[in-house]
Image 1 (cartoon, rainbow, N blue to C red):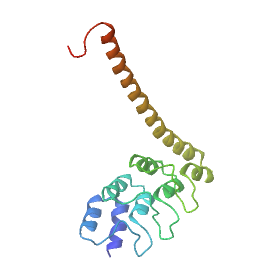
Image 2: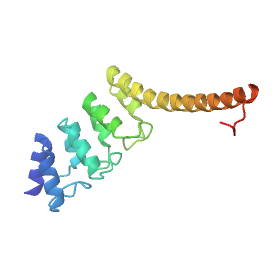
Image 3: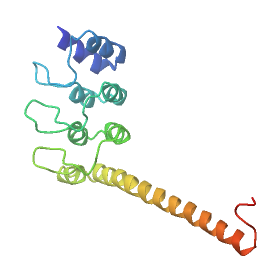
Image 4: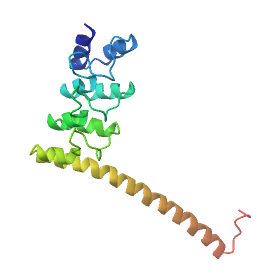
Length: 166
């Protein structure tokens, strides 16, 4: 009965019902149920990114396999279902796009190319690049701040102003 309610909550996008089911202990969202599906898989299957956020808040590992055969992660099924919304939601929730997302060790970008889905593959590669570019921009900003601080000190010394006097 409770697993049927989990199906309903995920299909309808009802976060309150999901919270109630987990609070009462009727459903364990971290494991696959008797029917062989997990809450993360159902969220991807029904294109419910806000339910994926709710699962993240319940500390569900979104990088773990989400089917009873340990075949794929939620990211695998989002790519397989060609769901850009779910792929982006998983990206925003911090899922690592460099880790393998299926049983065979395939990375998300390679997986999308293997499905002959050029648009999804390019989208996944763009998300990977965003993360790399963000790290590079932060490093450049920090170097720039350090450089300005040093040059300001040198300018004061050059002008004869004492650092202590200020």
